[in-house]
Image (cartoon, rainbow, N blue to C red; front, side):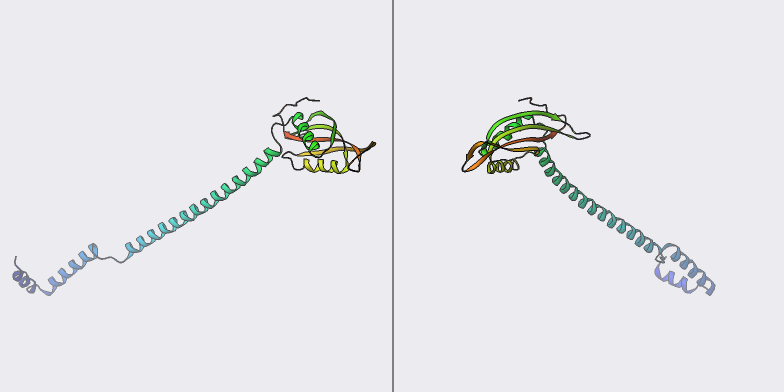
Length: 201
């Protein structure tokens, strides 16, 4: 059918036929082509939901990254502290080791060591450390005794003075200072159960 014949046929349609054709065309358009926007609105809602979820995931990932940074920093600081603890309270410290430290520092202070004796190892109740005790007797001036105690504070071990006794010696002096007899019980600390007493007297 050519174009002119189609136009002629349309012109020959009655009013009722024209209305019928119009209704059919409207129904076809409504069913196949008309979009009231509901699909677009649904797509927008879906996209907004996905965007919101992506933003929450991004925030969660950022929070996880911050937590990881804080954890790494805390572990580094804990490692440094642990290194210090291991250094000052070692797993192995014998009475022989402690006697060596005390003798070295006493000589550095110029004190004359009379006797150094191991007194054994004790473990306080429910403690995770053991106490290594050494008895030291030396003759020195008051200044030398103070130097000796000062030098001990600079060592890389925790050493405490549990008991001390000072008394006069026979008439003698060093650099114009009278000598005194120093007797003290020193205690070093080690991690419990890892070391054996040196047993040196």
